[in-house]
Image (cartoon, rainbow, N blue to C red; front, side, top):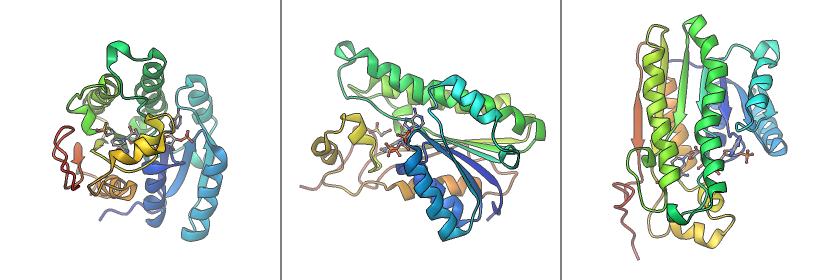
Length: 257
Ligand code: NDP
Ligand code: 8X3
């Protein structure tokens, strides 16, 4: 296992779910963390807990990845000791609604496209050049099985994750002479706040998504992210697709009654 002790890891969407689990997984390995999300109070609590539990340095700051200016200014003005970023985890993302596309509310499309595609691009655009200049760094995108197969009523969410899939592959090619690793972690059903957000706070409906089988946990995904980050420097994991054992695809999911 390649050590990531004292490496600087920048995680978007670190206040909840997979991003938060990544923060804990990296802190356990002694990495230094830049945690970003919109809910700064929660981030500050996580940061304090990580400092206490793992004795690591953490810089938490409020960032809405949809806001290009906020991304550009925030990353440009990171304190000096946080400017050199070794690993970027592009995790911030969401699904909004599950609805036939031709009847869907375009506002939800904007939110998904702005967060999952444009937000990821804005952050990457600010961080990849400094990695390229140093010829050192790793970008890990959180995609989805929805980036490999489209499913009904999820057209725009799937489109955003197909975009992440394409961006990951293309970015790897663009950075091929810069010694940068680019990976995509593409999960199936993970029980987080994802479905609650997708269904606009309808907790009962969200619960049904994970009924009758054992879903992945945020920690399972963090484990895969950490695996990518701790391979020897000459090893690039391009993509990991992971699903619950009861799930074979977006369409084939075995539920026990
Ligand atoms: P959660 O809802 O639990 O967490 C989402 C995180 O993203 C939160 O920390 C939230 O923080 C942050 N976030 C959302 N919008 C923004 C924004 N505009 N700017 C900055 N941060 C933002 O969901 P998951 O942990 O499940 O999702 C994480 C990623 O994993 C997403 O990209 C999702 O598409 C992907 N994924 C999830 C799967 C699942 O089944 N759960 C499966 C496959 C992929 P805050 O609200 O504080 O800003
Ligand atoms: C979230 C998982 O397949 O339910 O990316 O859309 S899925």
